[in-house]
Image 1 (cartoon, rainbow, N blue to C red):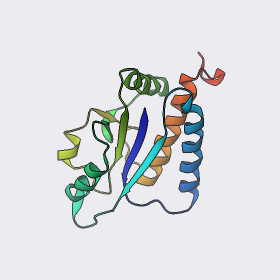
Image 2 (cartoon, helix red, strand yellow):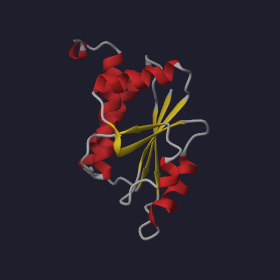
Image 3 (cartoon, rainbow, N blue to C red):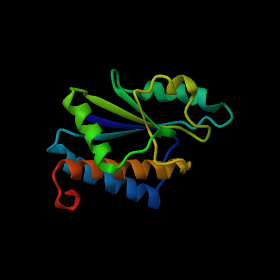
Length: 156
């Protein structure tokens, strides 16, 4: 199952970029044997002044056809890492070929796009910087792959 991160704004070189690249590389290596990955990052233009609806149009264009749409939303479901891993595995096992995680811009995700979401994921009630949310998502994808691979670190 291919994983897509569809996000508003371009991530520049720096510590967040280095972390993102590291976790995505780890996920691709670990996930390959689990039929998870690769991760494809789609960055769309930040439409300052035009708002979330203009960004939603660009995000929708970046979505693969028939992808399961998972939005990152502080009102979404908060879950422990093993539950997130199980969601990924279930989507894969159900035959889902693509899952797209959407990270909105400064104004959030437009209501029209939120309405199309199959799943809403939250990293808590706090709002996180959008570039940091990408890093956090990539780390959780990697952690999910290690959990699903039976890593001794994650056994209970």
